[in-house]
Image (cartoon, one colour):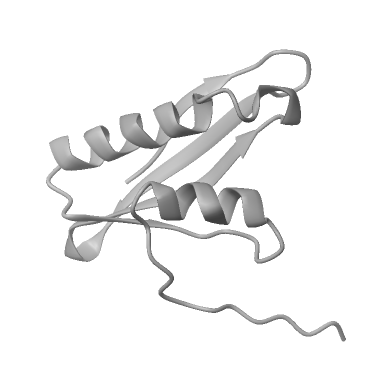
Length: 94
């Protein structure tokens, strides 16, 4: 099941996220974006709380999110929210 959970548009884009419920009762955040001017205002935390609530209501028992390795601010926010490191993706330019 794919859906856009919530999308706000201010200017070209303020924030977006896309969620998917996969097998094994795993709720996956496929895409999350918060425009720089809206960061560090508690909006990301609120978004994650809403996503977690949504996934729980749909019967999920875990939540997955990927983060771009150099994005330390997002990584730290997810850790504060209770996420733990599980996987490392690797890329090679060819």
